[in-house]
Length: 486
Image 1 (cartoon, rainbow, N blue to C red):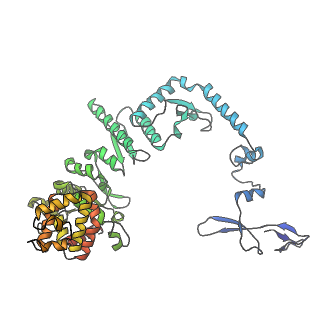
Image 2: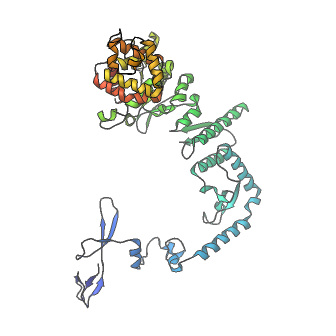
Image 3: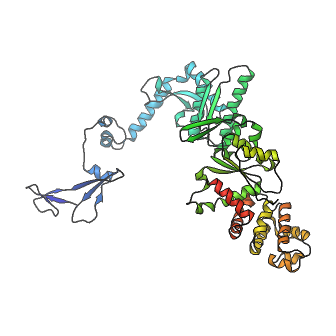
């Protein structure tokens, strides 16, 4: 990359005898605003990017605003480069630091030692990890040699070097201990840096402190906490829940609390993560819950690649008969809420009226169908056979075949283990009645009443719905999908 600079002040790409050897450096700044320094020469096709080592070879000296850093032996300073290997200096500095810490004898100052002990007790109570004992210690290089260089240490190690969770809990504990009564505690995302068991421990301790103050007739203060962790939500409890709904980012429109904590407790127990969604479908049972969780994996292809989570939508476990109450409680908190259930039991007129008044749509198959009946009645012979194979895979061949043989004895165990399409050759039941019989056994023996099994059933249900778009199964699932993507 060496070029020639003539005595006449001209640049030659190929240097000659009397020319001064020079390099041409090109600076390029593109749309990302990142600079690129390169050596260029017309006789070489590719430029050479200048590394830090290359730049050092230029021996550049610069007088600028940060020149004071070169007056110390810090990293990258000129003095450090002049010194070279400074292991001896580092060792002596460490020894001087240890001597200064020992000679300061800060632990002998009663007020400092008492404050450290108090901070340790409160920090342990909130779940902060304490390796040894908290003590005041000298930390040179921070705030000069003043009271600002006295820092809390844990067995000689500055507490500021501890893990994020421990630092946060220790800081909260120290701040709280400095207020004798009625502290207002603000905690933004308590889960940040903490494992689940420490989240539970910290919240439990904060609640215990309030309960103790209440028992002793002292000011209890207030704890305002935001969270994105379902474990924190569960530990805080339904009584503490406040939901802030927003019309648009940064603008709160309403703050709601459960009208009855008892109504919302099942959701906080079974599916607390749904509380962080913007719209929620409450399912009646595990089959329906697993089914929707599995089907949601296929929906994005019909919606520009967007999953329901991008819509802020979630599917929640309604815990059977509590589904209606949960849906009403969520609607009361300001959540757009819907319910997905089968139709084998009829909702009470008062419940139907309450759901309608709260704006909660109910998606169900109608005709008294449960989920198993809706699935098997819509499936062709091939897909019924696939459903049976899946049931055997999950529940065992013998259990499924014996269940069916008891209900449809004229088919015979041998035929039952064969092709479903051939059952009608021996049975007095027609194709529709055979499907009804299989569905009845599947529901009664709870073949699919499990969230994991229901989720695994979803690909087959998707195929059944696609092949029979007019069936109650297909139309109901399409309604649920449309509502979640609304």
